[in-house]
Length: 236
Image 1 (tube, helix red, strand yellow):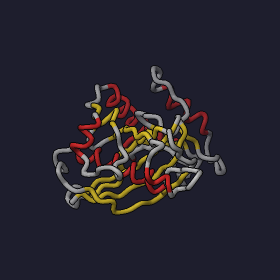
Image 2 (cartoon, helix red, strand yellow):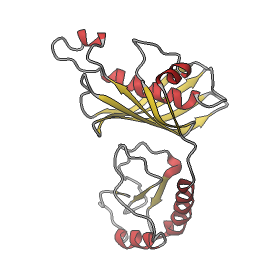
Image 3 (spheres, one colour):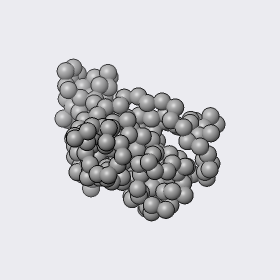
C-alpha cells in the first residue's frame, strides 16, 4: 500500500481501503517498501490527481492498482485479484553464474558491473549483484584518498542488469544493447569500496518492433537505496 499526502481528501480513504481488504481476507496489506518484490501495489489517493509518490519502487505499471475514489473499488478488486492469482503461480525464474552473465553480456572488465544474477524472469524482472572491489582502477582518480564509486557507473550497472533482462529473451538474443536515454535518475547515498550492490530492474514499457524498451532500476547496498533511474534501451 502507498498513500498520497492527503492534501485533498474528498472521501474516507481508510473506509475504502478497509472495504478493499475485506475482499482479500487471506492476504496481508502492508506499506510498500523500496527494493522489495511486491506482487502488486495499491496506490491510494484522496482525489483523482494521483499524486502518490511511487518513485522509490521498482514497479511495472501492470502491477500498480489505483484507488482514487469509490468508483475505483470494483475495478481495483478485479485487477488485484488477477495479480494475486498470477503471483501464486510458480515463477519461471532462474539465476545466472558469472560465466552465464559473460555469455549474455557483450561487456568485459573494466566496464563489466554485474557479477551474478540471483533472480531472472526474462522480459519481466531481474535481481543481480556486483561487488565493488577496493582494487578498481577508477578509484585512483575518483577520488584520491577518498574512493567513491561514480554515480554514472552505478547507472551503467543498472543498464547492464537491464541488458541481461532483455537479452535473455529469444527475440533479443545476440543483439547489441545501447543506452538510449536516462530519466528520473536520483542518487540517495554513496557507494563505497567493499559494498555489494543489489541491482533490481523491471520492464515498464516495450516496443519490440522498434527494439526499444524502457526499464526501471534500483541499486541497493545493505538494504539501503543508493540510486534509481528509468533507462531507455535500444536493441540493435
